[in-house]
Amino acid sequence: MRLQKFLSSAGFCSRRHGEEHITHGHVRVNGKLVTELGAKIDPDKDRVEVGGKRITASDPLIYIAMNKPAGYVTSCSHPGDKVVMELIDIPARIYPVGRLDKDSTGLLLLTNDGGLHHRLSHPSFDHEKEYEVAVADAISDTALHRMAKGVIIKGGRTRPAHVRRLSPKRFRIVLKEGKNRQIRRMVRKVGNRVIRLKRTRVAHIRLGRLVEGAWRHLTEKERRAFSATGCNYDKKGKHIGGG
Image (cartoon, rainbow, N blue to C red; front, side, top):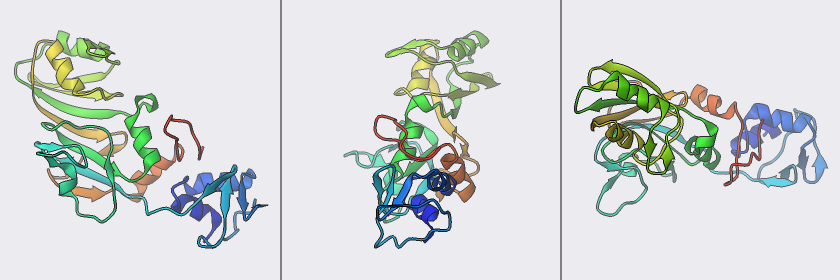
């Protein structure tokens, strides 16, 4: 296997960033510096290190988009409740990315890629999440403007958001954070109540025509778009691979 392909398949970084690590002199194979892109290794026998860190082959990385139905908890296990993992029948161990509360529907990502999980879940990376919201009473322009600027809820002021009216009782909102039940609490703060909440986008991944309860693997193009900004991060968010 080509060295840069091994770095990518091990989940350390994209192939392109693997090539950069090689040409910049960051990679050693069996203790010897390798700077040639054509170098090949045997993943079962050779020891590969990047910046002194050993890279080992990992389970194939899985990336799934689901249209979560209402009534399911975003968890791997929640006694007494239905959980989203019941809707997916694959042998690999994967985890939901972020939260989508029990009563909400729409796009939920699941993966076994720990670095991507962290980047999408942590607000410091500024990934957008887009929602369509239906409320009980007609919502005023003033209320929409207040939510766009940020309102005080438990835990502090919400970050500025992009809000656009869809009808007298429906609007679209784009957030770059994910406080617990944030949109429902924001709507209550302006004197209204959410009756339906659907997430339609996470970063560049869109819900599209995926029906409720169905799921699909992300396309190669969608996966490449994630790896274009880097590879892995440790638990504190420190970049440990890629660009």
